Length: 330
Ligand SMILES: Nc1ncnc2c1ncn2[C@@H]1O[C@H](COP(=O)(O)OP(=O)(O)OP(=O)(O)O)[C@@H](O)[C@H]1O
Ligand SMILES: Cc1ncc(C[n+]2csc(CCOP(=O)(O)O)c2C)c(N)n1
Ligand SMILES: [Mg+2]
Ligand SMILES: [Mg+2]
Ligand SMILES: [Mg+2]
Image 1: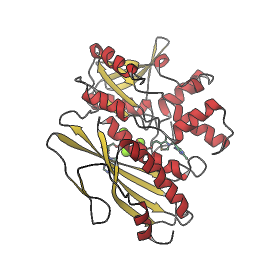
Image 2: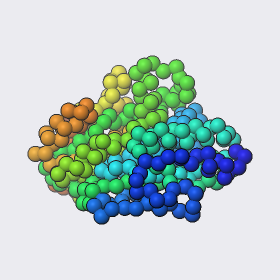
Image 3: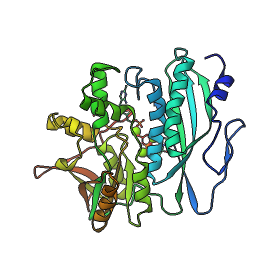
Image 4: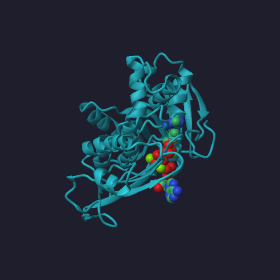
């Protein structure tokens, strides 16, 4: 890359979507106005080359798109409407300007679908690997944000999409490289890993529904996220192994492998949550009417906080063994 400032000018949007934006890229910080009716939601997540992607698992376009998607997924898990994002990028010398342009194109395309504005960031060089950090900002109606600590005994546990697809796709990429060849079915798994679409509509339905709902997104695997819900809510979660939604492209896999991907794989970026039993049918209908998934995978009981898997009438403890940056993979 020739010049940091030329690069910043290049990636600055010409037009913006959000009417509250007062000052975006170009000053020392961004300024936007908020309203009394809405609460601000903010999160940050980082992707590191070699940890979250390799040059043979994601293209530059996909690195950008996924870097934003994983943050929008956290907004969705709070029930928020995405509005703004900031990008901090550390670029090694091996990256070309064209590749960086592609990375921003990936972010830009996802941002466009959610009418999010890029309002700032930081550009630095590094001698090592590419590091992409995205901060995402959203809005939610006052009192409507969805938290992890709302589950109670008697609730049902739901998922808004397939579990394990991303990990299955990643293994295929490890086996065959970025260009495959992949069968049509394998392509769906690979795409789920490379270009996850955050469940913003699902999150909005769940935040506007007048029901007590706990919510989380699946970044580290169903086992880890369910444990987070159980710990925050101080409740016991029972997941029925035969109810986990497994993508048809994985139906030919051994059951054990399906379960391993679903529970411990991660990066599915679907939502997992709980709802009182009596409210589940309404939500299910609302989701299904517009073609969205809403799968009941278990229930909440009173007891020591934790997660159990119910498999052929046997209960097994499910440890918080998903992806953990400071531990070997479970
Ligand atoms: N280094 C840190 N400093 C301050 N707060 C942190 C730090 N790392 C994580 N947190 C906070 O800890 C909480 C849990 O973070 P975590 O990253 O596990 O959740 P997540 O972003 O939903 O998951 P994932 O990163 O796997 O997508 C969040 O409130 C997050 O803001
Ligand atoms: C090359 C390569 N190796 C391994 C993985 C798997 N992986 C990395 S981070 C993560 C959890 C989510 O991250 P975080 O907790 O930081 O949000 C998972 C499942 C990958 N995507 N690419
Ligand atoms: Mg995080
Ligand atoms: Mg999350
Ligand atoms: Mg994580």
